[in-house]
Amino acid sequence: MIRPIVKYGDRALHQRALEVDAITPDIHSLVDDMVATMYAAPGIGLAAPQVGVPLRVFVIDLSVGRDKSALITMINPSFVERTGMQLEEEGCLSVPGFNATVARPQRATVKGLNREGGEHQVEGTGLLARAFQHEMDHLDGRLFVDQLRGIKRDLILRKIRKLTKNGQW
Ligand SMILES: [Zn+2]
Image (cartoon, rainbow, N blue to C red; front, side, top):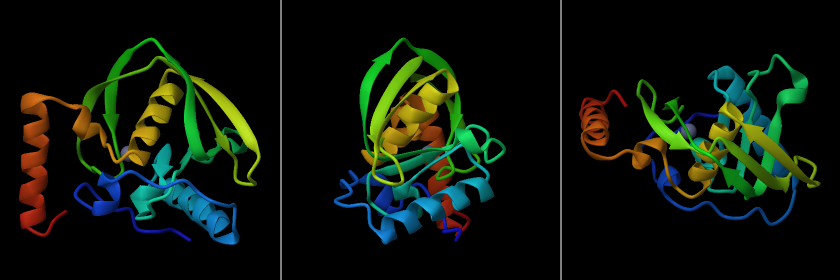
């Protein structure tokens, strides 16, 4: 089932998400719905707070469903290692219509539980490392806009406020 994606300003996006206690049928439904929602958007990553669920779960698929082996599900994830730095344009399904250059690690290794509750660890470079950091930030209530400084951030927030006021956000 495709779930609605909440946008910047929604409470769920701006608070720390909670650990998943147990892999229940509800968690399986959440993961499956998140994957369907990510593919439908379409996007390469989605965190549970983006569908209004404040739990530490994210999914990433750089192939957007074209390659079945590319889907990564992480429950209660943590960083094992982060090295290097990259500067690239980045966007977010919860901040549609905006993007900005954000500094991210060049290489990142994340460990967590998979959909079935087994432990796994995945190493990413480039875009995957960027996606890991972006989704991990969601679980801590941070969006890419929050990483920006000064005039670029003010400009985006001003436009979002205006869209919200006009009922277009
Ligand atoms: Zn995002």
